[in-house]
Image (cartoon, rainbow, N blue to C red; front, side):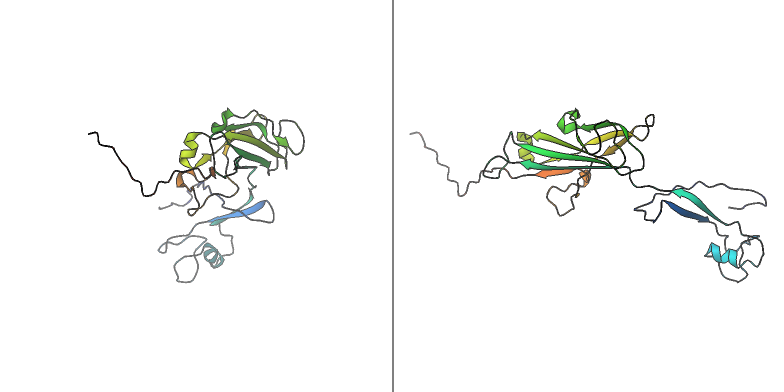
Length: 237
């Protein structure tokens, strides 16, 4: 790209922070440009005959007294932790002495919503297709009984699902819930899917790469094993 004297180009760069860590919620983001090796920059060309690889070196060694405009730093970038923790775990409520799952037994699900952000969350709707869609059960609330998930508050839902023959055939139940909420009373609706406390790994029973964040409850079922079968048929004389 060739730039004539006096022209400007504006770049918009969007970055995603993976596991950001800082002692504060404010971080500095720096952007810099470098000239090609065969082009001179009026205020950012180092006086040494080496190819440009470092914008700071270019500016610090330009031999000029004026500032270099090839490096910009934004000090107003702010990040925050995920505002809502949404965890769902389940376990089989086994009523028979043999430890085998049967039709009519139940899985008990614990669904936990925790507001880890810096503002209250509103208009919360919990949806679980396996459990009938929109959940109307009242959760256990750690701060007060209103319908606002306050900063630092935890809501815990305890729900049950009854096993079917299809579940027994599969040897386990996959499930994922969804929650809708707003960060302000009139804000946009945000959707978030649940995940288990400990996601499955490729060596775990029930691991499915297409359902990485699903809660999976495995169980044992009664099976019929026939060894050394002998089939006899009486021949009619």
